[in-house]
Length: 281
Image 1 (tube, helix red, strand yellow):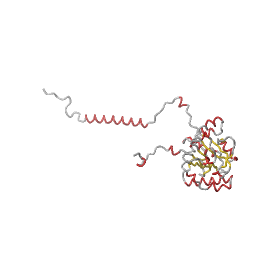
Image 2 (cartoon, helix red, strand yellow):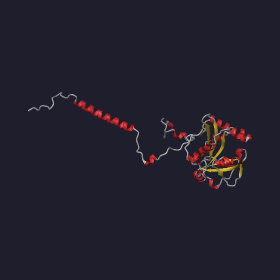
Image 3 (tube, one colour):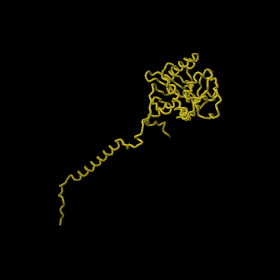
Image 4 (tube, helix red, strand yellow):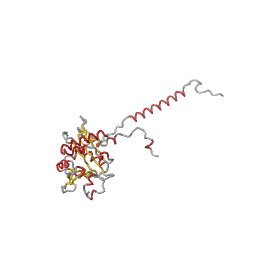
């Protein structure tokens, strides 16, 4: 006896095609849902900690502080040095405006403060670290035993345009030096100050290195007697907090986007492929 098919041939000619079309549609819908889940920002639940969160304290300045990394800016800095030193020491104005080989030493960083409105360089300082050679000040003093063998720095050529009205320029430059030292594991900063400028340096957080107010002629500063000062990079925050230093909050507890000494470190990962020369063999 011959069995007849349940459905006659040709009754549903597109059944297989319809099944596969339905399957493909389901897969496409799943894929779209997955893409939407990936592209939708994650919503974190609001906890008590998030509700008490405060934005970082930020203070904008009337100038920027950055690293001098080209010959044109270095020439502008030297002009400022000449004008600033000439304001107090006319006989040394030409000397401090001349080319100085130390400016281009690998262990030297020069910072400049540039007015946002005029683009004029209104302040500058130079910091040298004793990675590969002694500091200039090492040739003029007997270093205290507790500082021997440490990675230390010296700030020189700290100048501000005499007619510039913003009193924060010096402190911003010192903050840049302090941040530089912390980032590069430098123990502290030496400075030489003429007696007439001691009040300014004390306001910047420096203290007398020897504690006896002695004056030492600095051969690289025209042989003029200077007080030898020190600012400890490691202890500075605790010391300034204990003494209630007026600039404690400015240096240690305020975010200044205009002090851009590390701007290159925060530009993100380069999208360009590494060159063959930079790849390991």
